[in-house]
Length: 472
Ligand SMILES: [Zn+2]
Image 1 (cartoon, rainbow, N blue to C red):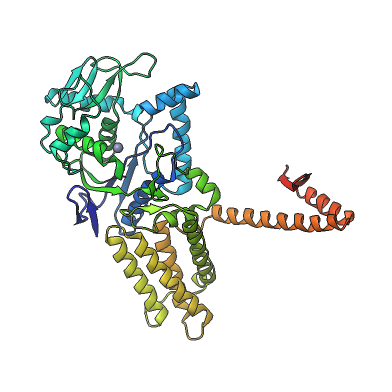
Image 2: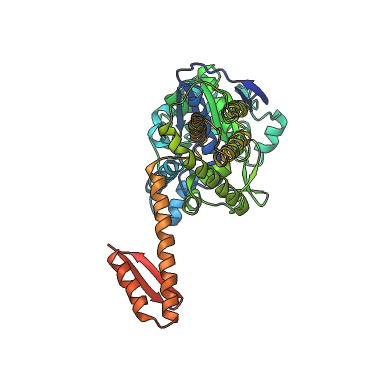
């Protein structure tokens, strides 16, 4: 299995430190707003890496942090007239709800404000080693003490300097230096530290939380490509100067999601919130769409793509519904003889080959849908197809679809389908009632209204037509 490592800029064989505990860290959101679907792409890639490693037999622990103290939180809380901790609490909970619904929840979601002592300890170690300095209660990292600085983003020292000069801070010894601890400002949240009251910088959070929950060297670190510099670079600089060990062995960076060719982002103001997308489309449709391109390729988010995913998933679930009965009726035999059984084996090996090649989900989906077509052909011409082949196809397809999280057999999905069905039926009755009213057939019209009322569906006639709501 190969992973593209941003650090070496090469595909590398994946060899975990300990197959019994593969560690994955993913840079999480700053909780000052709902997350957008571009952030969700990174979370989804992380989730699929985790599920696929599980499929390969590894035990995995995934940590994704929540940045719950930051300038953005303080600014937005000020605008809304609430406290920063209240705002962070609210959006932190909303984030976890979204993650749960999207199937991307990590094993642990550590919060920055719950790891202040760990951050202080790291900063103190760096001060003791002479890799940091204090100015007026703030602590800065001394970049020139880390000769490998720039190794992740592959930036030359002169480029780093040019970039850093944009933001001139007279208190820094070197424009590239960055703050790990910010001295308290009046009215802002702050914590006690050996350097006076203050709050942590963003980069030190990830170093502290990753090492606390996963150990000094991570197997895989995942982040959006925009975080590679300076955030991830600074995480390396801090952590490796403390431990003298590699901080992460494989660095995975996920490409941007785009809208009309422009990066989706809060600053570009062209974002779609994950929760809005999930209200419009089933989870599986959004997941399918976001993995329809391999994660290092940009992907354009648009209606046509979503509709394609929706119809692909309808094809998939129709196929699985048709196969389901064979799973319970038929004992699977070990022999592989029929063409369909060969197709099942081919799908499995193509799926694994695609996922082993740096998680090529686009090709993995291709293998799945090739088998779906094969199954559909076999179902219509069922003569001569051994029933055991259908059972094998069902098991193989459900297994790989669950690795990608594009098919769920749980009750939640059934509930969703029931609600959709109900809505269609009520709409149909309202249409019949409208026809009756236009014929002045008040008896039929009233009968539909009254019978629906008995079923707790209340109709209201408005100028724009009838609407309905469920009453209890
Ligand atoms: Zn991070």
